[in-house]
Length: 147
Image (cartoon, rainbow, N blue to C red; front, side):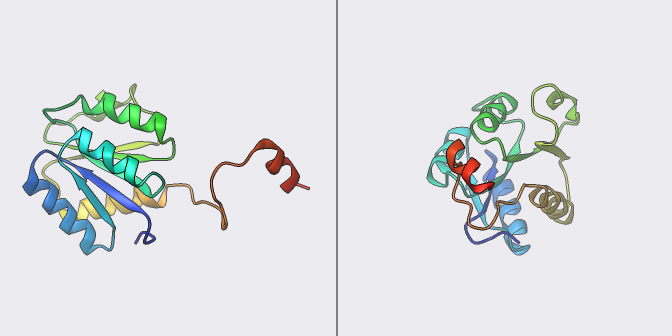
């Protein structure tokens, strides 16, 4: 289960698949936002600038090169994890495009139990913020707090 202000974003251009994934994840107590396109997902990232911890996205979408798009999102959001789902196999296409440890792959068709298990593993791997953390600190504040 995620904290109330943390979200998993599901991006798929197939509304039925999006709804199925959302229902499965919400049933497992995850907070879910959904988008039908890469552009719509970017709007969600702007609205929820710090609360998104995982992106679940279809690889084969009409509007965008999903791997290049995810690489761009990861540059802007370094702690984010990405779970790619696809009907065609081969996580090999991601190996050289995305940072190690930032992504995983689940082949369609998959069971909701497999999806929930994979999402839970990835969310648990997201680094936790220390209590009271409010974002990046200036070097001076950081140096003074290490006394």
